Length: 240
Image (cartoon, rainbow, N blue to C red; front, top):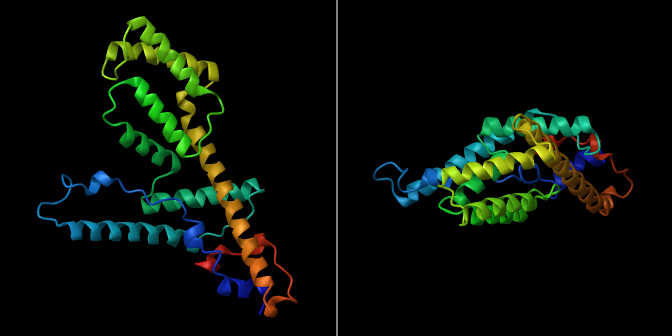
């Protein structure tokens, strides 16, 4: 039996259910809150419903990967694009969040109830930092600078429910966006670029896992005389 075929059955290090679906299954907690629960639904039943929902989403998404051929080649733009499309299809069919949707949901839940803009912006900075997102354009400093300008003009902290003063901040933000060349109509393009970066990073991790798995198996006596296959020749569907 060929080395690559044995690897599919013997290796425990390249588990697609873990490596491909590393993105968390995001279900809004408020959906399962007491207020949203049907009358009389007990805690155990709510918990059971959560697990059933997660299981169904996971199995639906995994079913997509069982049908699609994925090439583990992070250096090939076509392979990265195809993998990103498979991930997108799996998310849509499974009702999962995209990275941008998760970020948006995190922002909404973390900033709910924050009354002033300065704390809001500092919270955004914290979220970005914890998620490992880099501020390559220096937008955060610019936004804080814009806030300083507005607060200096109104002579008090800017509150989020102050519509008149918030309009001043929005105008300052528009200047920043123009300076950085960011347009609202280009947001879908930015989201697509983010998804491609994520797809490339995940393929790189899959490639690393595959190589480590093969190196481990290569040390076994039964594989010592067999050549290590090219990672790109492996079919992920055989791992599921």
